[in-house]
Image (cartoon, rainbow, N blue to C red; front, side, top):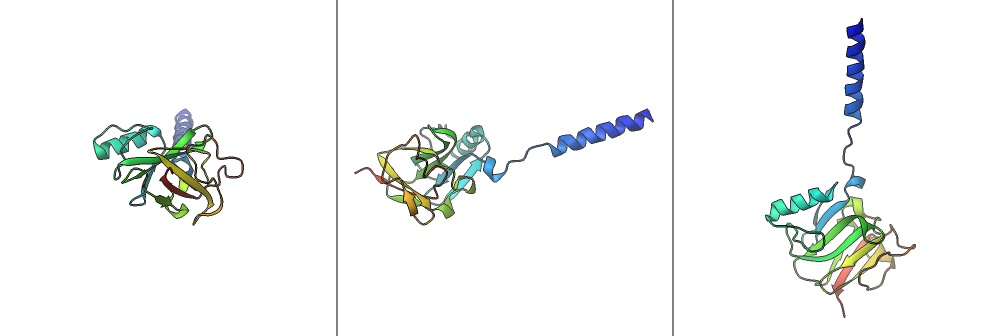
Amino acid sequence: MRTAKISAVLAAAAFIAAAGTPTASADSLDYCWLNAATNQSKCFATEAELVQSVAAKQNATFGTQAGVSPMAEHLVAQLYKDLNYGGGYLQIFDTEACKKGTIDGKNLPSSWDNKVSSFKVYGGCTVKLWEDKNYGGASTGWVGSMKYVGNALNDQISSIQWQKSV
């Protein structure tokens, strides 16, 4: 009888432990790179996984401020989920430093559509972030880095354009 109770308790504990094991959902994949030239992207649950993936593909060191994506050379912009450049981030790379480019919402990783709160730009770029897919709705105008996109656009961004600063 005692053995049966112990077995039942152990089976229940194993079931609870297995059921409680978290799996990564699309919303928890906060660290991403996107190659604008190919529209390929990959997301990870942790920054360390992102760094490891890119470093393994390039056999190179990868940092959050300047790095090398698996298929493009130049960091154009880094979008953040939180204001003041906080939280997860999406790094957008292209084959040339700040050539004119675009990313429509259909090409954003699903965990990034309507999630942007702040962003940084690199290489002399300015960006224009749009509320809707296909570059519609409200926009930021052509700007450099922003610590906060404002209440009207916070967590509403679905399209991005960039170009050299004029």
